[in-house]
Length: 235
Image 1 (cartoon, rainbow, N blue to C red):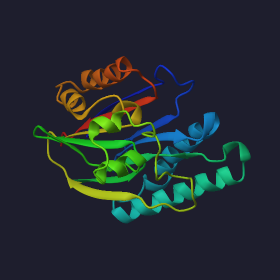
Image 2: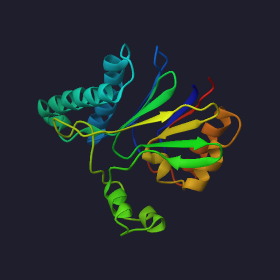
Image 3: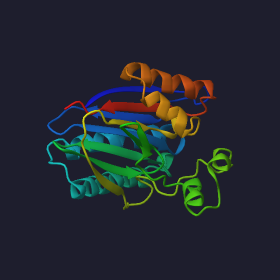
Image 4: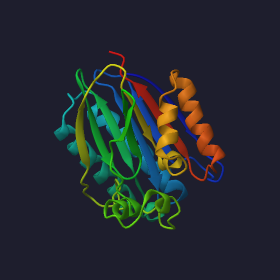
């Protein structure tokens, strides 16, 4: 896939705790991690997650099992790091991965960073938010409008590194020429609704589309770090 990426500190945060990966190896890796756990902890957790993907997956052949093993190793490493350093207590990170094989794309996911797919004009969120709001939406206790203003919308229910083991979501999608994929931290998705994101993903030029996404999130408040990776299947 061809890909472009952007990351922005936003208008409120004092540091950027997001990290991203666009790694063109035999089987390319694309990932977004959104750290949490204080000023230092969030930075360290997200970077450790991205470094772990490169370390464990660069020479591997894509599979669901490899993703599960990799996410498990990363979460153990982050958990051990925080357990041995009080200043890092409570740190963790989201992690959303696309792993490109010859004829399909693998998804690995923990947290509330998101993966969206646009295929022939149809826009779908392919990741499931591991968050309090996500749970309430799935139970029908909140609608989309109420969720955008819910006071605990940033509470996530599953994260990499907060325990010594993790259950990650996985999925496999066939590749189709022209498909577009967007990975993003919640600094984008909390500000833009699905129609806005979909409209941006339909812009012909990938760079223009990525720029537009970030600008809209900033105009809507920019309350968090904003990270996007926008890619297109071109072969």
